[in-house]
Amino acid sequence: MLPITRTRQQCHHGFSLIELMIAMAIGLFGVLIMVQVFSMSEANKRVSTSGNDAMNEGVVSLYAVQREVRMAGFGIADTRILGCNLLLRAGVTLVAMAPVTINHASIPAGDTNTDTLLVVYANTDGSPQGDLITAAPAADQFTVQTNAAFAVNDWVVVAPFIRTCATTAAPLTPSLTLTQVASIAAPSITVTAGTGEVLPAVVMPLYPTVFNFGQRMPRVMAYAIRSGNLTVCDYSISNCGATGSVGDAAVWVPIGSNIVSLRAQYGRDTAAAGAMDGAVDVYDQTTPTTACGWVRISALRLALVARSAQPAAAATTAAPVWDGSANAPIDLTGNTAWQNYRYKVFQTVAPLRNIAWMGRVTGC
Image (cartoon, rainbow, N blue to C red):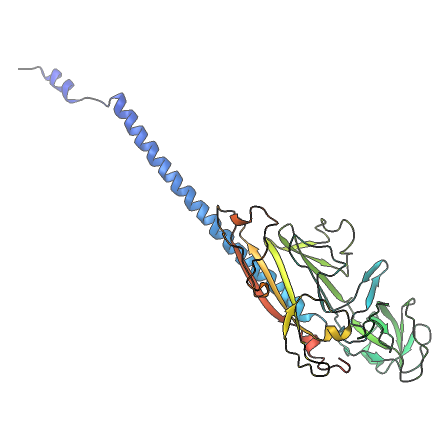
């Protein structure tokens, strides 16, 4: 009979080194699988989250631009001032003032293959047709039909009766000067000295017209895609076209992240003169050069392209399109790695109500 102590030693063996190594390998393999699954989950989560962020940025950005476009032309839609150069302040002139201009010559280009927009409107409570001057002007004092429509510090321009800013035959662009009402004494208003206007010496009823833009300066907003973001510049505060302004975030302020393209087209009424119905017949990017040409622009077709913030390998195989591209892809090759992102196109047609409400214009 074997001793009890020997039997117990034979029944209680430990793990061998090989068994421990195998167990550690299995454990490490399991940990590796869990880390890989977690990593893939987090990557998918980041892509999904960045896609949601792109959706939000696109919607908000489109709304912001569309809201401005819908106001375009308010208070400046009269053919006597459409197309005029407007001296906003010393050294800053708005060339060819219009409700909304695609790729305005004064605005530095945005990112490659993107458009820029310049939107202009006033804040007036007065008549959009202006207030007729009823007596020969005396220096900077003007006798107007309804001086009660003016208030001290209103921003105004004085336009000659004879429209010379943008005629149907030979468009010219003299500068109108933005000035303020200094005082009011019925039936006259007095404006800040130095309007710079050359007022024709003609007889009644061919006196000039005063256009009241309201207590705030006209809103002149420039939009452009810069470094993959939607940016805006307030022309009434900054000189948006000044050398070196493009890279200044205090001038061109980012308002939409990962907005990589802006495209726009004018909606044009091509009906014969005198037969315009305000309906859009064609869309194009041909900027009008006359007041009558601007009267025919009643809508703006607009598209913004939002991009996911996080790249993903081979995320996009074909560039997106929009209604204005005739099924041609939107060029995104300004970024050589453009296919590593996901894209969403946000587009709309914004009516230029303040142009449409003018109706038919004599001579156009």
